[in-house]
Structures are given as structure tokens and as C-alpha cells.
Image (tube, rainbow, N blue to C red; front, side, top):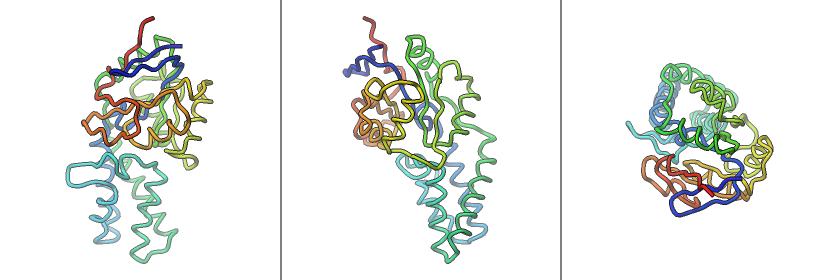
Length: 244
């Protein structure tokens, strides 16, 4: 087991660390904003006038993305349902609304995947550092499992990431059962596991699962986005191994 220090907070007897993906390891703001904008345009082409309300629902305002909004923190399934609800308000049936939402998001993903998001600075180095200390590492994301696996493959992180877990329509953040299931995948107990994420949902999920600690990261300097964290960091290299 390992001791980890983040600023003035020390976590003892740690066996594993889970990281969120979007906004934690991956600088996904431009990607997510483009995804929402493209989906809104595609839907607006079928239902004129719905584009602007959809952008507001997605948390997109011009060139800015709300890091606590739908597009930034919701699972794909949740985004589909929220989008379909806006479409249904125009008088379309629910199944038709859901079909339009799903197809538009699928098409938008094909468009935006041509320019994938980049790793945040220091991501590879911190994963290497923690893995070499004997810690088990995993990604626990609101993205789909396929997206998590694609991310790990794209940046060749499989030597460090032992668990690649997304949300595929079942449990979703902030349900603590999702964290406990992820711990089972790594063969560790929650009370020996840290969660590193950029949203309130990450913190609530891990805290309610009785995790060893909740580390909030805010690359944009907004600690309110990670309320409930035991400690808030602004860079991944603030996660330090304590040498005994």
C-alpha cells in the first residue's frame, strides 16, 4: 500500500486510484463544445428554432462550455434523454424524439471524432509514476465504455490503466454502486481507493461509496465545480507519492 499527498492532505494505505476522463485526464472542452454545437445544428435543421434552446440545455454559450452542464458531465444516455425531452416539447412523439436525438448525436460524434481531444499536461507522467509505485489504476467515466477504451488505445495507456469503465445505460454517476463495482473490477476495497475527478458527481459518488479520498481537479481554477472534495488540485503533478 502507498501513501499519497495532495497539498496538505495525506491519504494512507492506498491501493488504487480511479480517474475521471473528460476534464480530468483529457482536455475535452473544445471537443464537447463542438459535439454539442454540431448536434444542435443537425436537430435544428429538422426542427427549426430548437437549436438555441438545445445549446443552453447542453451548457454551451458561444465559445464557452459550462463544466457543470449537461454536455460536460452527463452520460451519453442521459444526454440522449435530455435532448429528446426538448424535441418532444415541439409536439413530436417520444420514440420519434429519442430517435432524432440519438441519430443526431451519433452523426455529431462522427464529425468531432476527426479531431479528438488531447491529454492534459502531465497525464502520462502521473500515470507512469503511480503505476510504478505499485498502485492499481483505472478510468471511471460518464463516457461510454467504448469511448474509454478508444481513449486508452489512442494514447497507449494500457500499460497503466487496468480498469476501463464507462457508463452504458446502467448505473451512472453519482451512484456509489458504480464506484463499488469499479473497485471490484480492480479487486480493491473502496476504503483503499482514491477518486480523482473534475465534477461534483465524482466527489459525491466516491464519498458515498466510502472511498479513501476524493481529489477534485480544476484545470480552470473553479473549486466550486468539485464541492465535496477532500482536497482540490489544479494540476495532476500535485498528486505525490509519500516515500516512507
